[in-house]
Image (cartoon, rainbow, N blue to C red):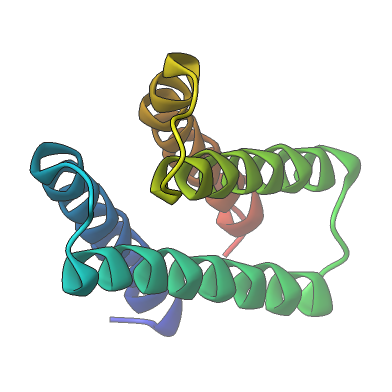
Length: 125
């Protein structure tokens, strides 16, 4: 298995872990369990760093085109939106209900956008 394949497998497993821990957190209610909450946040951070490294290394090997850059920007915006909505849900104060709905939809859009971006970045390899 190549390094690229291992990284993609790592991204997929990370997203699965993020979704499973997120579902667990959502069902357990506030206050969130420290262990699961920490895993949820750290795995999200790790997958973000891994994807950033993959983008950087791909850019070093071959310059990115405008389509790839646009896909990366959209993916980053979805990641930031997901993290922001999750952060709002984790505070003690009551937040509007739409924030919870956003945090249910944005992760799915993030995964789809990430898959599309990875396809665009790695299609020539």
